[in-house]
Image (cartoon, rainbow, N blue to C red; front, side, top):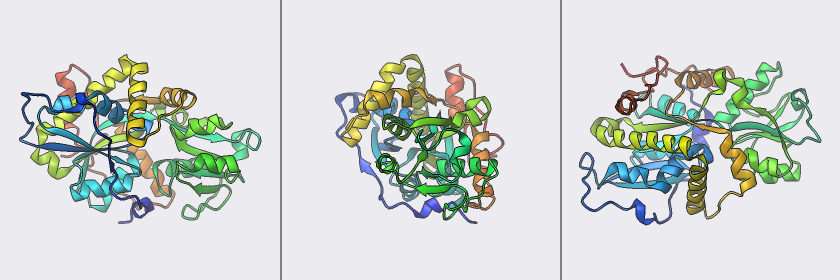
Length: 355
């Protein structure tokens, strides 16, 4: 079974340890271990679309939920390296985008991971040079950046191109539109130099380009029913899920509590996410980037499973993926247990759950 090419594109190792945790992250005196574990290893990206993880780490939600079991963290730059870490046992639970989750599941023939919850929707935009591109039809013939061959945004852009009736070779990116695969870290430089005319990218890269003078031509949310589509999921290794269900429930409860906090205190949560970005990378986002980026992301416990299935179909139609068997990719029983206990509505796996 073929998998998306991005699985072979990681060159950034296993990620890096977050900086020294603040005092509130330390194990509380007298607390008990969960499932007898010394630690639970959690992975996430330094992206605002992983805001649930960023706020949860910064505010100590995960450590509080795990009691005397230490919450330890690794920060990743790309999905493939996080999948590799999960498969090798270097992390237990991670926040990740839909394409690498699909890749990891299909490459292992459904044996290594499960999606156990949602985290975020939206936060992806087509931003362009307004001097070169004034309307959607003007995108034809232009050079548009996406983060990586076969990644979530790349697949979405290829699907949108196809819907316009234009032709692009998915592998090379050549055709009626030039799809230029460019790391998000250097996309603003590429835009500034004129080597790309725009980009289909997640936040905060989209807002960084806007700060450079680009304009938002299209918000991907507008292409989806109810303006919702999965951009970040929570995954776990199947081994860890089977052996340590209470630890998994603890992390999921913390995640749900974080999302409730974000909804109730958006400004404080935004500041906490930015503080964690600074702790992890040494650099916070300026307000002109942070504010619009944060506003465009919707944090949710719902994994929006039907949209993941659609994203997989888009990859198949683009020629980047053989039709995958995704049955069993979700196990939402632990999350639904947490949600029922909190009196919240349960979430659906769109028929792709474990039997």
